[in-house]
Amino acid sequence: MAASQGASPAYHLQQVFWRMIDWLYPPHCAGCGRLNDRWCADCKGQLLPIDHNKSCPICDYPSIGHGVCPDCSKNKPHFTALRSYAIYTGPFRNTIHRLKYHSDFGLAEILADYLAQLLEKTDWQPDLVLAVPLSAGRQHQRGYNQSAILAQTLAWQIRLPYTSGAISRVVETNSQVGLDGFQRRRNVEHAFRAEQKICSQKNVLIIDDVATTGATLSACAQALRHAGAGQILALTLARAIHLDLS
Image (cartoon, rainbow, N blue to C red; front, top):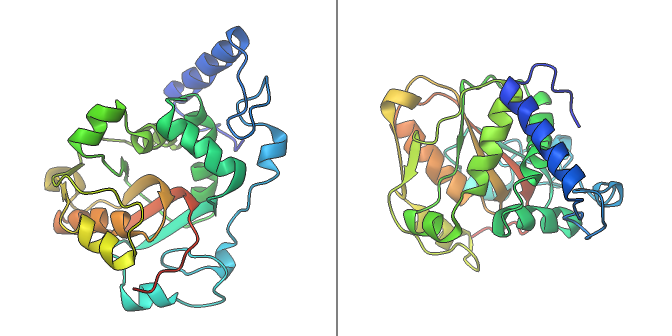
């Protein structure tokens, strides 16, 4: 894992807590189920990190050569830039699902470290960390927001403020699963509201678990721009591969 020398006491306490839990209740790897490791070396070895030198400079869609991808040329997102750590496939996909759908909160410390490594490779200077919010209905149904857990853990690690109240989802949107790029953008249009008193004049780092078309992050960024934010920078663990040009 990346060095956490500058991490906050809360981050170090989190690490100690999960080491104790792992000692009391030996974990199974979230990627493959192997006993005694939350995220084993074999699964780490199957990661497909994105080469940011060969990806779109705006949305980070991989393997397009140089320059802006066709989708960003046609539908420029509202965020300044997005970076994702790896392709959404294999054990990495399984692990994200364990956090997202199965309340495996111990994975947040491991996965947020990939976000910290991403941030270290940029020249970004964010002022605060936010997470893509869930609707009230989904928050109630699931009981937690995995992106908020990642964002809080990252904020502790890099010693930046995190606030859950800076952006909210004000429209109960349909699921984005199965929608094309145009439908995704329409579905989340005007679905978010950001607080001017928190975001104005601030460079914002917004966190989500997976980017597909980037429509949700772009809609969040639009709300943040309306609230007077400066740069709007986005990090996700994974990037789904599709290149939708609709």
